[in-house]
Amino acid sequence: EQYGCLEFQSITEGDQEISLSYWPNQQTMSAWKEQADHLQAQQQGRQRWYRHYRVVVTEVLRDYSFSD
Image (cartoon, rainbow, N blue to C red):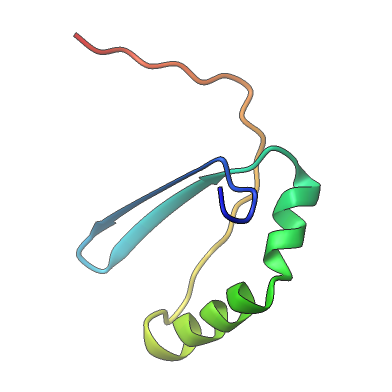
């Protein structure tokens, strides 16, 4: 919740990674995107780890789970 993110999950398998972040609104997410430390982390990621990445922004319409 440091930058307004409500929840963050990341799963890696081999050279594939999926990360999910949940935000209260678009404005909070956009403000985080402009934070200096986030911009620096993006630059470092491009230089050191990622050959490519894809970002999808979507709205959760329903969220439910099941467990025994």
